[in-house]
Amino acid sequence: MFKYIFSLLILSSTISVYAQENEDNPTVYPQRYGLRVGTDLFKLSRNIWDNNYTGFEINGDYRWNKKVYIAAELGRDEKFKEEDRLSFTTKGQYLKIGLDYNMHNNWMDLENMIYVGGRYGLSFHEQTLHSYKIFTTDGYFDENEIYPNLTSSGLHAHWLDLVGGIKTRLFDNVFMGFSVRFSLLLHQKQPEGFENLYIPGYGEKFSGNIGASFNYSISYFIPLYKKTPKQLQSQPDNQ
Amino acid sequence: MQICVFVYLRICVFANTRSFYVYLHRKNQSHFLTNNSFMISTKRNIIPFLITIFFVTACEKNDLCGGVNVDTPQVNIALYNRLNNEEQKTAQMINCYALDYIHQDTIPVIQFLNRASFTLPLKVYEENTVWYVELKEWIGNDTITRANLLDFRYETSSEYVSKACGYRSVFQRVRVNSVTDTIQHLPSWISTLDYTNEITTNDTTHVQIYF
Image 1 (spheres, each protein chain N blue to C red):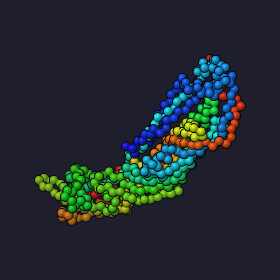
Image 2: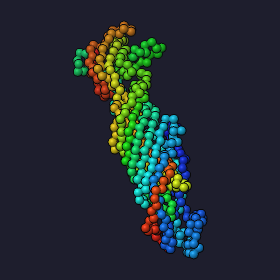
Image 3: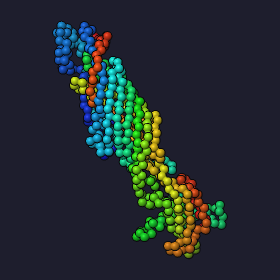
Image 4: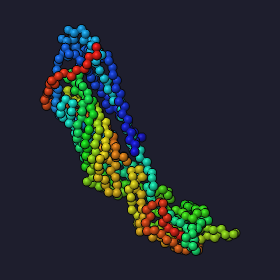
């Protein structure tokens, strides 16, 4: 059961968001700019609870302006999978690079994010076919398993991600976030006589070109400079 | 293709937040004290949220194996009249078993009744399969039983189909020989036969037997 369905209660975070509306109080809060570096907690924890996985991801973003962050993820996956009729291991590196757009107006000096973003992702990997069974429908002869242990290297894949997520400051410069992403596979180099069934960074490859994944990240913010906004963001007063 | 990723994202918007006023008070004390209308004016515009990400359930793979020629082809054998090569001929009863099972207590026999064609599988992990093929006919009160061995020699190669189906085998350099029955020493029934050199699809005839 665990192989197919896993449920996680990892993060239950609260973000308190406030809207500033008071014209009488022109307090301007300087915005912090800097680099945020973190890791994916889901991948990290998976090393412990999934015997068939090793890997990690380093992610980071750099605040470009008030709303836009340049974001990137760099990581390594090694995944063994046993299907009904074959088993294989994929291992390799990946890089995803793109932008996050913060749609959320922070109140005062809070630094929370509710964002959407896009990434271009690429992976370089190799895939080993460990075993397979030949699909016969007669049922007359016994079914054997073949163990070719054939490694195809020099494989690569390119895809686009649509990301949506939240990030919140837990304390000091430590942030936690959750994101969901949908991936569109653009191009891939497949192993000969086989198929890319798992792509590092992209995840499991289904028969279509669409994939989905999620991530729980914890990151540390390295403040570089502060910028004071010219005008205070204000909400219209409905009174 | 089906991917299921269920994200339960619960967003609760609440408007009271006593703690918010305490926070305001601390942050902006002088203003709080001087402006009486502040409490009222802010109350409407405060949008504090509580975002709770509840849990993520992901279920893997739902790809199913299906389609034409996704499995290893079997040998399709058609029966023809030896006196008229164009005419299909129906056999009353054909019993077949592979010689691999001959020393077993129970031999798995495949039986075909009143058929002008029948299908036999080949071993995919070896390059030689021998079938014992017995023909039974009832003419008047007599039962005539004749038999032949069909000796298939071939080369196999694996072909990738899909994740759900895995691999299938195809057969190349196929040679089929009809041999006289050395098991029960019954008379032969097969006159001649034709065959294709390759067995790669399920929907074509591979062997023609004339009897």
